[in-house]
Image 1: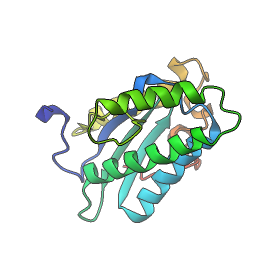
Image 2 (image 1 turned 90 degrees about the vertical axis):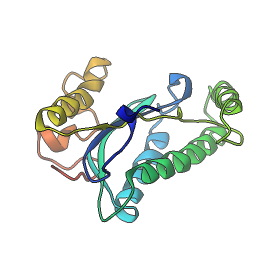
Image 3 (image 1 turned 90 degrees about the horizontal axis):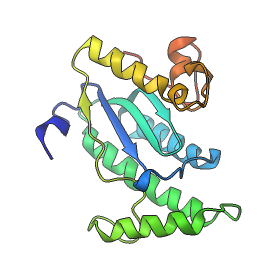
Image 4 (image 1 turned 120 degrees about the vertical axis):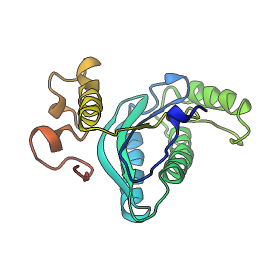
Length: 183
């Protein structure tokens, strides 16, 4: 991996994206999204993750995050992805109404064969391409990009109307589903 996509300073905000293997819409159900939100909450409360902005789409998540108190941001993201991967695969596997269960599990199993880090399934694509947001302009550009994601996808007309995002925190100064750490 090039230096361009490495976290050099965990305490500076980074824009990261984690994508579901094969861009599968595996996060389309609210109960799957709740696994992600609960894990982010846990990381905020117990691993010193600072979440500055977020949006959770059906096949990926964008975050602007940093770490506090000598925490290591790459370790936090590694643990987050590992934990959510296992929980999400279990949730899909145990969901009696999941019509795409076999297809998704087969795709995750096939992806795991090419990655020695996984035993059985690979839910997330391996990398998350952290980009350090070293200027206010760069932060604002990524913040706008992140919040406009559901608008560009045709899900909502206004960013703050999308439930699974920090846009309501920024556009209306109201608390969203996950407390954020404003910069």
